[in-house]
Image (cartoon, rainbow, N blue to C red; front, top):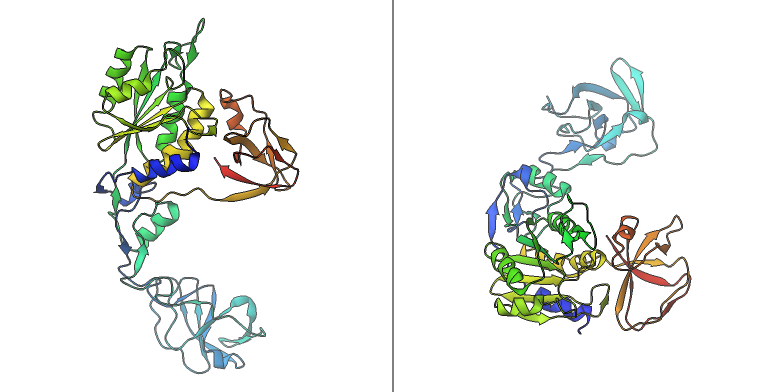
Length: 391
């Protein structure tokens, strides 16, 4: 059994990029940039007003100012602003030459006959200057950026309508077990519904990858081998749930070895999720995940997601968040890192939710994150700072 830190180093050290492709801007959200994007123009492209007001010269603020024109967004100023002059201007409009500030409408008074006076004590410049955000030719977004809505806006502003992004890894999801039935069947006798398959497909999609649901393989070596062989023909990663523990029918590691995979580890010192398998055959990767849904969910977040992002060229890292714990927490065994579902209360403290163990997937529907309890730690007192991973 290896530590979660060592397991992560092994996983991340084995990642390979899956190639690049061009996509339309409207389909780029959630993808990872495969090359730097440079601005094809200054941003802003001209000096523009940051508010509605009057463009003038700062040295004239104590004088009566004559309004020479009105400039709305999209208009080209008709002239230069000279001494004792100002231009009525709208937010986003181009500032006329000669003006070096924009005074707010609220800081002016009508002085009659097309004139105003500045009534404020002082003013900010209130101009967004040409190129102050980005200069033409400068890097607007770096290679490896995971594109969120704010990045899409930058791509649009930079004129990048067909960004080069990493290809989406293809991920097969396979469930094992004679007792497992699909969600559209009501389980009878000793059967249970396949929640892992749907859960993992959703997690794969949320990580920006293409999921390939491969159904359920029964508890036989031949059936599992056939399912593994088929699932790895056109996919980059295979996720198998169940069949990785110590039972008589837990033979997934054996099947993977016979299928030509090199297995790097089969147990990780984490709770939930100890019976986790990771292996590689060429550029195809496999995770054998525990059958309990909280375990499979947690291991996906801890280890599978970092691999998928790295295969996409994104250096994914887990944000380090610390909160005081709302109540005393203690446990009897501390041989593994434990991850417990928690909420954050109105005082900014974390409180464990009702949790019955790794089969209790419903507990995660109430949780804000997972509290991390390191190996060797038996007790947290109320107010102690704890690490929390948001989910």
